[in-house]
Image 1 (spheres, rainbow, N blue to C red):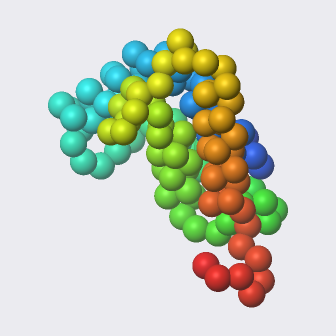
Image 2 (tube, rainbow, N blue to C red; image 1 turned 90 degrees about the vertical axis):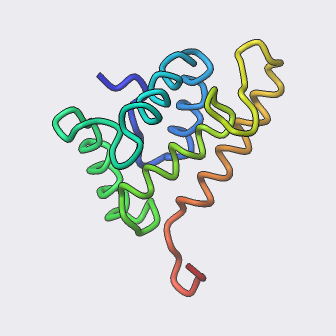
Length: 130
């Protein structure tokens, strides 16, 4: 089961929902980080049979084909959105947010995250620089 299902037509919203999930369940992101540090220092976090990327990657490919998401390797785009969503997560090297912070602070971060992901994942426009 995917706790925060992807909406590849709105990757910015997905990133914000991931941010919120990290606030609700900091234990999950800490466990994933522990697994990365102690068990899987390189490559995918889990074995291929246990990976849940395929539906997400298919959704991104479909959004790309519809002209709603920039071109590029779907896995790389997914990884970038997830990384951006973790900017204030419990594993941030800069600042770990908590649910106890003021709502205005979270709203400000959500707005920045939404705008940043939206710009980064916007479809390529003819004549625009890559």
